[in-house]
Length: 337
Image (tube, rainbow, N blue to C red; front, side, top):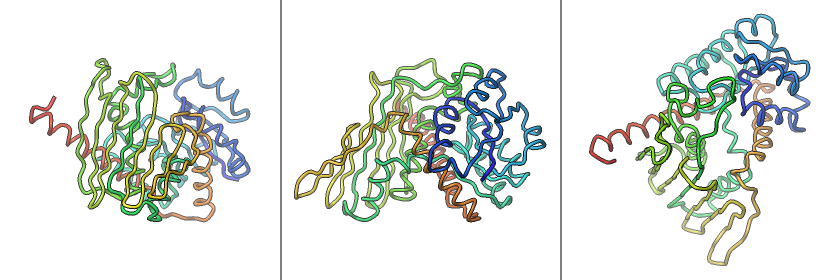
């Protein structure tokens, strides 16, 4: 059984990671023996959710007192480099929430550190394990849709999620901590999905603006286009909507897929086939996605699979984010408001 520590006991750890560790897919292979968090009030929550797990507020003390196989980093992006350095120094495997860092330059340094350490690294790119994206990805990759010409993804939210009350609950809208706004927070998922579906794009064009939440220090809306030789992938992401919703449309030369939040429809010349799907905006669905991700992590650790494919995917997300912000800045300089 792998012994692990969660670093950062905020909302994503409590609502996503801890329940996933109890899932039947991984509960016999992983034991969380410790938690590191800077907020003292998290101590009682850890005792409630993970009885027997030790609580630490200092990373050096954690590693000096615990014999760990891995750490699960659930802190804001600007802290990832510090905790990854500490883990790699001990030869400890790493799970890490997205995105890899708050800026691309930092991500490149993290990449070098992980490669030198010879450990298993798995980013929390859990969307690839959802029924919706797994089905869409499979149909694209097998050619069932033919050549995909257009893919559109829309994510509508009313505001940014807040963090735990004990430590800067508005960190997602503070660029120093997050690295950006909704494009970082939500777009990062779609940037690794883009790689999963189509590979790396040839060109990215982005418009990033604050349309409603002027008090945020980051954009609340992103409209982005990713160009491939035969495919245009477009996404609209916003925290400025009046309701919470998701939609998808994928057009190919042999058929199309559309998703309205509850139904995935596959349309061909022969007709329309409905594929039942859960609501991807329902965060209760995330637990099983994380459990499948953690199972993949266990498989790689037990099999000593030190491949860096997922590390490259995480670094590519950071590269795509940097290009997107540069694109938007260039449009601003040209007078686009």
